[in-house]
Image: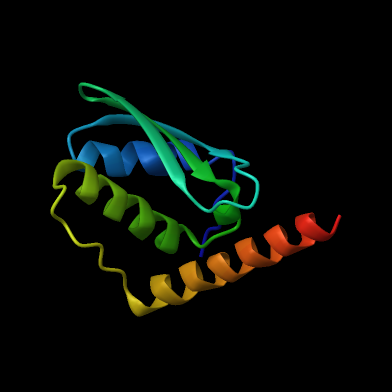
Amino acid sequence: MAEMNASNIGHVIEGIGFEYGFDATGEFEDFGNEFKVKWIRMGRNIEFKVSDYLVGAPEEIFSEYISVVFKKITDWEYEPQYSPAAQEYLEKMKLARLARGMASEKA
């Protein structure tokens, strides 16, 4: 199982974007203790900045997360649905975010 890193994020996002009709690029970004994804869209072109909390995530979990983002972009009424494995992983990332926030408050 491949893990996500700075060298493969662009390829993964590009492939998923193609499935949704977009020319997509992406990179990881440090948002401090925030777990989020930001994007800029101009027509069919879209550029993602993805929380560095997902560095090291299994590619399958990352792909599912980004697919949900694309579904939400193309259908604002879409209610995100994740597999149990993705839900568990994303919950761990939320806990890591909270721990990082508490550590920075103590510093």
